[in-house]
Image (cartoon, rainbow, N blue to C red; front, side):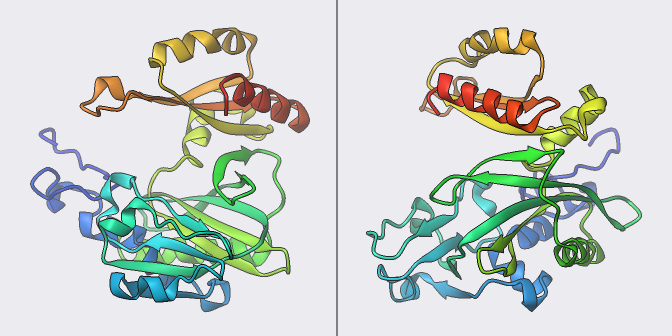
Length: 296
């Protein structure tokens, strides 16, 4: 900042650290756009799942064990992106997540039975125009938890969702947002089209695309799948184990983190990888082999 450059924050930072006048977008705007309660402001009602905003005092009555529902945090603070979405299936015991102990407001959303799940990658440049970067697909497990993305050859996005995603990004641009965003949307088993989440920041959907564009631009339109590995061993140990696969080609390391380099008392290493190639089946097989090797 001492050189006169503007900071583009991805999560709200204290103004003492990043004054608004030195930021491309204010902390208040970033927090507001990423608040799960803001979806109703930016999404056309046709594409909204049924949802209500409740206080902590009303949470128990609004989230009964006998019904299926999704619990999302409603906060402008984002808490360093440590808040997860909690999915509850009817008849299962209710075990509220940790964020229920630190927040006072929540979003209760209907549980959708998803057939297709996309992540729409967009960007808003200095000219304040929203543009489509790519359409990706999201891999989710049996419990509906995100496990990675598919890139390149994906199921076509319905035209109505494409139009709405561009409109959402433009609405954000009109209130001052600049940068990358990822909009999660889906088609349910009964054909309903819905927006699930608005992520106004760099995400695990955009980082692989940026990596390919920088390192292997020829692979941008080829099949690819992302995967995250976690282990309690040092990150160097994880990388050593991956070296044969890296030398064989068709694999990129797009990010990594080792808590041993922080003040976190829990030792954990994380690696973000992208498997790419010419054949979707081969890519999926190699991605599955990596997950199996590392116990995921």
